[in-house]
Length: 267
Image: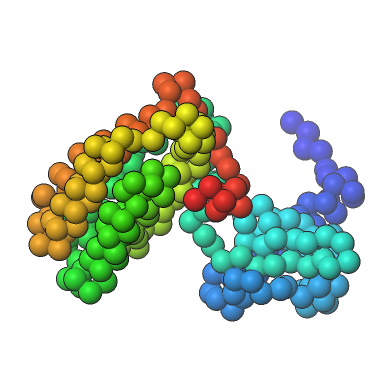
């Protein structure tokens, strides 16, 4: 077997890529450590070239890597520069969406995952020793807003999603918070088409179903406040199943990844 050597031009490209990855690794670490914070403007490309003692090609490739990861936004033109973005659940949801989209996964698969995981969030929330001062006030406030908006179907649907967001983020387990945050963001982005159609056709849940949803939120909040783990799990399982029937995807609907910017507009 003859092993061919790498041409000079190809070798330069390979070296440039490796150098870019090293630069990207350093900048990424500074973002993760908080030395570079959300909204910071990175030094200009010429300054980065001098700082890292690398080529302009390597710096530009490093910025492209970070931009793909959603950690920077590169602005072109006279006001160019790279703006730092702290790691966000919407970015994780986007990458997850890309993986699921590439595997042609149906939206019903995502719905099943949420139906199985959210009850675990409710159970964890019921075990939090500080739930009375951290989570419960947020759930109560959400329920009060939901009750006040029961006749406004669009607002009711938005606040209803907020309750699930608060519950997931208040479970007390950081890993679960990140996982559920990503799944929620991905589900909401898939839900956008249904929401638009429901608005056009006035097909939101009936008043009776809205009252039932509010009652489910109240009971779930009570179970969590009481520290009743099993009841909280069972109530959440039933309610999430009922809630998803209002935004029922078709059997052939496949997951579509949406950029973090699009997710923020939808969410």
